[in-house]
Image (cartoon, rainbow, N blue to C red; front, side, top):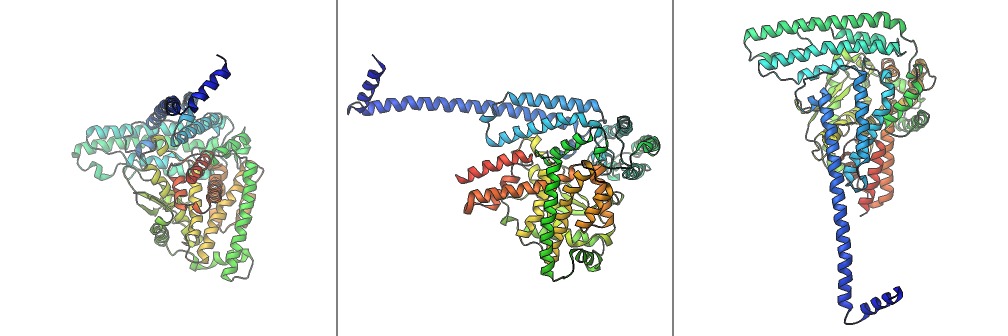
Length: 604
């Protein structure tokens, strides 16, 4: 029978009154069987891909939690090892990152549910950047004020509970490892210098000063356990512990003194007067890498700086509008001088700084249900920064909730208050606490649906971008109490925008430290002290890190505008914010894919 005849017979059978139901039923059964088999195949493929990814994410997490003591503190786990600084360790990390990419290539990513796809793409991006970054290991700063691990190490020891005699021994063993860690800092600084990387003379005094501040007597030492931890032990056990602890502190102090002697002698003699990573071997390529790493976007230093210039101009226009609203008829420079000289715009003491920060964050928290679907369980608060750190940090920093302390804190700088206007404190509170860092980070840590590796990972552009977006959101929410406070928000935001200009300026182009400071002085209301510390931070402390703030905020605003345009009257700000915050931190390129998916889902 020919094909034409077979087709005719089938059509005839299906069109026959007696055969219609049977024929149609038979055809539907056949089609249904095909559909079911296809669906079963897809379901099986999804299960397999999900299982493979879950196993990979679990392996990545287990390796991280075994190697990172700060992760263990956050999770409430005992710390048994403080790893040395070691190039071989970074080689191991890069090799493991390659194994992650290899395993991802064996997973059918298209079969994954959307939330798991985000995990896969995030792991891929992080692994690729880890591998690429190995070649710049010796260009990484590790002892400058913002990144020095020694001040943070006290958090490890604060989290170590001492419950029995074995706990006393374990504590002493951990203190002993600090000696080796300091030695590894000394060795790494020596190896860096041999390869042409030496911290600039501009920042070296702060490095030496911070290192010297770590030399303390055993009583009240930064590694000493709280007295209440030892209260339940017999007197002879406490005395034996104190004797051994004192011996270890003496050893730590002598190791630090040796390190300082090197830094203040042979090392100082090699230190350059200039700033920026451009002056070091392969520095240009390193900064191009840092630009992508810190923004989590495929952008160049040239593009970032141009965006920065445009942002500064746009914000200056907004500030001019507010100045006109206030009724000040002078120039922008004269208005800024007026704000800098009026005592009523400055706090009377650290207590007022704390009060203003807390009140602002609390006020936004009271309006949370207008902008957010869910808020974190962990509370937030403010406390003063360690005075030993205030001289080298412009503002302060947010410290995350931990298993031992379920509260997020903004550690504010309470020094030189005659140079720290309160006008920007509302914007700082929104950025650092609510709805900024605390809202995002506490939500992420409390999200049990995320794989552990995603719950505990933060990306500069996402984290700081959300913080800057939160300050801006205060405008929409009507949170700034008067035109001066709104102007103060722009004081903060234009300060962050200048970073996009001066950070690549000093690290990639040919800007001197003075050129960068002049630009900041002309464009911001920052004091000379703040301009001095910030410009050093960008150029010799954490190059590229400051790019994440406004670049991340810019991407968030672009994605929001896209969602508003595509969804029209169906756009819901609360659901958009949940789409951003709910899955936790991710590279901005992955977030863009996620928001496109969110828009499609909202259409349905």
